[in-house]
Structures are given as structure tokens and as C-alpha cells.
Image (cartoon, rainbow, N blue to C red; front, top):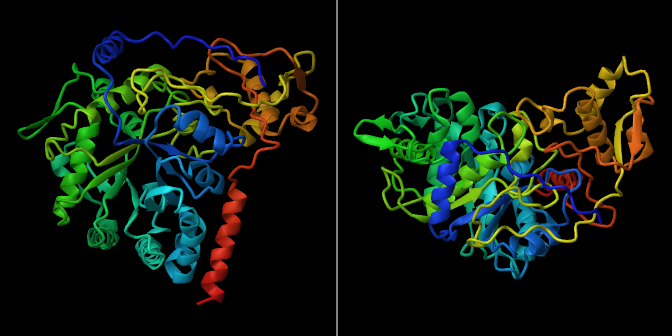
Length: 488
């Protein structure tokens, strides 16, 4: 087991943030019954699923969890816990599920029915932000058919009365260029698919699941202040006719309500499938600001005040993004995407937020098994005139997002940034000697090279732990394709 890690105080808070947190502390912590967390699996060295459940979810009284995919280890660990579960269907499976009912039946059998006696399933979430502008239209033609086939398979398995099918949609599925909710509407190029989706959801009394990315919105909408995103009382409201919005969350929900109303589905329930704030990888992505956002959000939801267009009717559920950092998550949207965890990759809380545990501090994952206390750094005794190519090679195959402007390691400079990259590559490759070669420029040391808040992490020892792996997911895709083209 790794010796106790050095912990550093959070960066100083701006006066406004400090006041907000003091106000939060004066009020009793609200219940978080309708709040859950997202649990993703894009990690090179993940915590064992049983440790996540027994060491994080249960001790912190997390009432519900949304799984990014159907991890057998996670589902087995959640069995018998009473934690409500939403299980995801990745985009890669949409085509075979849409084109074959037998493939859908096989997926439901393997990932839902097999665990239904012990797992408290609530939803099957089909697709992952399939309407995201960055994804184009490659998955949209399969989306509703895949959801419909999963629904039929649940009916056939006599499970449709225990769970519902939902389809996660990114918030850019509706346009709101003016930031005024009353002007929002579904994007014209997806209107046909959205109409089919809304009819499907309405026919089965399923809610609309929206995914919000407040940090991305803050980056792109320069006319809106940070206060507006952090639920601060001193923020300047956005006026939309006679309605005033004092926070991003309510405005986003009402933009969706407006879009649903214009499409003829004004009373459809809403679930927020993703909302959070990163703690690293960009300017304004810090643990202090993330805590301010998360605490403000949970307090806001606990008041059950709803939104101006839906007073006293908040989203029926909201899933915080995310439980753990994921060092292999796509950074197409920004380096910060790998740092949304409330907990670090190894299950150590970055800040306080009420996940269900009340006023108590979050419990950390106990007894984490790390690789030996060895790090890879740049050997300054070598000729390092050509080190740039080795640095680039390391970062292209490892996680250097903490070195991004505003990141926790952005200030260590050269050659410290090279050592950070070398070590990250070395840890991801299980501390193999080849993983610290870099044409002879790497040096293995037993002295922790961490500097202030820039942590040179040791990887989790996964040598004896089973874990969900993308290769297994690809094998499942191949099996479903076999069902599609050979069993029809």
C-alpha cells in the first residue's frame, strides 16, 4: 500500500466564493434524495468496482448511480445494495441494437435480466449524447430504433414495469444562442429524429434526459459571469421578458422546457443525466470552484423550488458528473474533461459536497493498493537538447492534462513538465523499465517529485483486480453484430 499522500490546502477562495461557502455552512445540509452520481470506466488503472461500491458509494450514502456502460463487475458489486442504477448503452452498440431485436434481447439478457434479482435498476440509458454537434449525425438514424428494441426486450423479459428506457441528449440539441430560455428550440436538422424520440418517450411515460456542461458554457459565453454559474446571490440576473434568471441551471432547464413545449410535449418529465464542474485542466477549473458549484447545485435542488417555467417542479433526478477522475476520457471538448471527479482516480475526496452523507466529510476509499513508490523523471545529467520529441511522445500516450494552462501542474515549468509527462507514461505502463526509457533520458527514482499541488501520482495496482475494459466492450459489439447478421 502506498504511504499516505501529501495533501495540500485548497487554493485561496475569492471573496465572493468565500461568502457563498460560509452561507452554505450556516444552513443545515439538505437531503440529496433525488441526486445521484455518474460512474465512468475510462481509466487506465481503475479502482476495483467492489471497492468503489463498498468504499465510496455506500459509506457516503449515495442513493443512485448512473453507469456509463454495463460493467459486469460494477453490476455484481451493486447487487443487494439498494442503490438505484441507470445502466448505459454506448454509441458503438446503437447500430446492432437498432437493426436486430435478437441483439437487443441478448443485450438485455446479459446486462439487465442476469442482475435484476439483486440490482435495483431504474433506467436503461440508450446512447451517449448522440445529438452532440461534435458527433455529427452518425448515430442519430439508429437511436430511436435501438431504444425501441431495448424497450421490447424489457417487455419480453417482464422487466418493463421495473425500469424505463431513456435517451441522454446533450444540451446543444436545442439552440439558445441569446441565452434567453424563451428563444430556445430544437435544432432544425434533428427535428425529425427528436419528434420520433419524444413520441417514443411519451408513449412509455419516460422522462427526457438532458446532459448539461456548465463549464463549457461558461468558457463560450463571455457575457455571463462566473457568479451566474455558481448560484451566487450577488450575480446579475438575466432578464427574459418578465422572468429573471439568477443561475445557469434554471435557465438551461427552462430552455429545454421551452423547446419541449414548442415540440408539443410541454409536460414531459426531465432528468439531468450529467452536470458538474471540473477541478483541473483549465483556468477556473479548481477544487474550490468545483465545490462552490456542486454545493450550490445540491442546495438549490434540495429546496425543490423548481424553475420559473416549472415552479416547485425540479428535475425528477439529477446526476452529478462525476464520481471519479478518468485519465482516458476523450478531451475533444477540453483537457478538463478528465478532471470532473468529486474523487481523485484513487477515491480520495477533493472537496465536500452532500451526496447523501449530510454534514459529514466524504469518506475516502480505504486500503487502496498502489504500485511501488517509484517515479520516472527526466535525467538532467543527460543531453536533453532533443527532449521535446520524447515529451511529445509521452503526452500523446499518457495524460498530461494537468499541464494545460490553468492546470495544477501548469506552473512547474521546464524541465519539470517533462518529468511529469515521463512519470504519467511510466505509471500507465505499470512501471515497466521500458516505460521509463525515452531514449535514455528517463530516470527511475524513489523520491516523490511532487511539487506543491502538482501531484506525481502512483498508479493503482490492478494486477489482481478484474475491471471493465474497452476491449471487452468491443467483443460484445462483435457478438451483437453476429446476432444481427446471422440470427435474423
